[in-house]
Length: 121
Image (cartoon, rainbow, N blue to C red; front, side, top):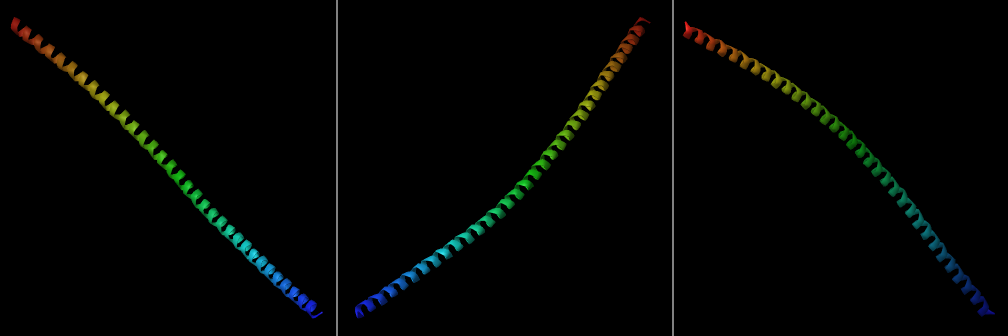
């Protein structure tokens, strides 16, 4: 009879220890799940912030690229304008030089004609 009582007591203690261990395991598991969830939230927050920063950087780079393209376009137009002006200036100089040559030729022809008239006289 005493042995049965002791056996029941021992069974109760073992059962209570097992329940305590199960509760401890359950609590540990719950804490691990909470830690993982917190880690996931922090990771998502970090990724969201990094994504926002990268999108902002891309936007700035896109704007800089558009500005650079506009600057190149303006410089090209300016260079083309200067080239047209220089072509026009060279064309005018060519025309002036051709006119000067015609005047010199006419002067020389007149001088030759005078010399020939003076020689006949």
